[in-house]
Amino acid sequence: MNKLATELHSCYGVSLASEFVSKATYNHSLDFVEYVADDCFTLSERIDEFLTILKDGDTGDIIGFKLKGFAYIYHEYLKPLFGPDATPFIDLVPVITFLFGKVGNTVFGDYTERRKSAYASVAKIVQDREIKIASSELPIAA
Image (cartoon, rainbow, N blue to C red; front, side):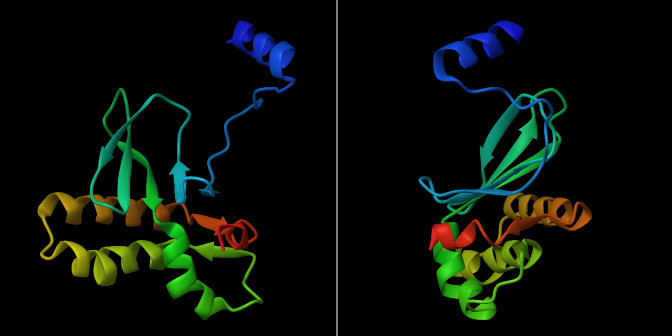
């Protein structure tokens, strides 16, 4: 890893983070919110058009997720709730619940066990770790 860090710094003037910090982030260009709990090799498993779960490559445990199409959810459902004076951080539990229920059910019909289990696992991670996303990132999505 030291060689990679040296090459990155000499070629691009960037440095690797000194330590891993798990937090929810919004990727504007690809329109998704991502959360990864641990710094490890991950495997992605697409659940539906909104949710991809991230699993630890060694244990298979769910350690994160991607919520796709977040700008739509933000504009249609979150922004009207919070208005221009949004709280500094937005709790992702209601977003997960919303996607699984209202939007997901409309688009995908009946729930499958695999889908129920994936959304339940992600909701548990979000709730147990109290994952929020900085609302300052979201207007960028707007």
